[in-house]
View 1 (tube, helix red, strand yellow):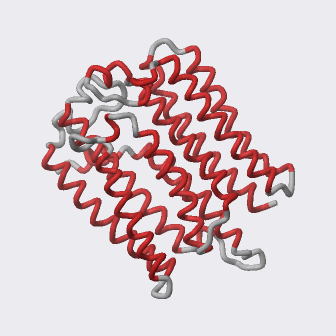
View 2 (cartoon, rainbow, N blue to C red):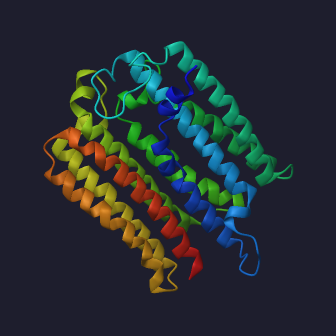
Length: 307
């Protein structure tokens, strides 16, 4: 077994984006517990690290499943960007299915440990709720491209990313700390969800022609390039607006707006998308938007809890 091939299939460059919501939700959750005079930090809490590991597990599973699903359907034959392991024959479909199973088991074990650490034996209902959410996350990760009814092939991939990378990631991790819902937390959750969806939209803009040939009816295929670009602007500026609304409602210092730095490359990305006529040239923009989202999560978290 070539470990390097599985590492490639895991697509490590997608991991910073996947944990962005955990950083925001955890930092805000810990901040709302009012540990102002305590030595407790985000980095010293087991909930944070277990949530990070669980999310990484879900992301790797999703990437394995995507490699497998697109590989057996032939969608990756002429793709732009990194080569996929199943379609290139480096990893067989059977081997990838085994990797998916192992990843699922490991991730479930970590998720159960996270649930126990967060809720113990006193909050049984919460434990059941988060266990169900964990199972739903695993099912969603696999069904994105696997099976005849894969929702990534019918235009619902954007909704999946928005819900799981944004709302569930931020609000869920916040709840792990506070055991409560603060409805303001939905604003940064929407920001993270929209930015994460923007990464997927870029990916689908790049692959539009091949996806269309392979009957992969992403939202970009359904909308067409012109409307998909308008949709992209909406995602970026929608994320900016919801972040600013949260800052306005929770305003304490002008320094809370430091996260606006992360929107400079994102706005530049919108300009690049507007001018683009060669889809393959958008490949480099994927990393820029993903890393900008990660930077936003760090700056926003620091700004919202430190001033």
